[in-house]
Length: 324
Image (cartoon, rainbow, N blue to C red; front, side):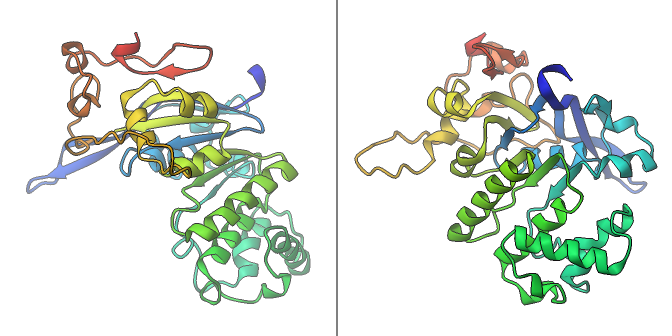
């Protein structure tokens, strides 16, 4: 594999049809994800950030084919995931797992922890019998910091943080190589968030995991990510190493996002950049650069031509006419 690239996303698109009229004909499309490209190397964490509705969760779910793509390609270990048959995809999912955002809605309330975490072990025929499955589940629970004696309990008997640990245990059950973390801490209290982030880092080191970490909280992403991609209205606006992006943001949208991140030092005064207007609709995105209606630096070209995502400095990619 080229430079140890585990996952390569090329021109990924996901459009949702919008229907209207008496006959419910398709009258247009919501362009949730519109030609995004990036890659993730084995063992690294790529943070995918942006406002609610920018398409980051849709991107994550399309990569794993929980949603079928409109166009594009996703290569995992050199194999195009979108061309796999159902049986081939089932085998591939042993190596690609997902942790969902909602620890309350992602666990079946009628199943015990043993069945929730161990279900995939039976499906993929890793556990030969019930006893073997239960032993593996107990090991997984202890790995994520839960009591192995709780295998018979149901989700409602756990707190939000504990439920998310169950979700993490489920994702680890098949020893995956890539884990898509879909806002795994956004529904948790701040004190619990730190515990879960530290757990994810420890697990990454222990099991040599690779993460696509989707979030809207830039302070969380800074803590866990090696590189960060910033999304706006279905497009990637900027992509760089974490240090480079936070220390030297080049896209006006990234600048605005970072200006809103709280600084722990009260003596430091950061000028807050307040974006005017609302995020445009992905049903009818603006022509040219999608950020130009809210950008204080916008030029005439910004409303006419869409900027390309180009490398301006050794792996620092920016889609902005001001930098091209």
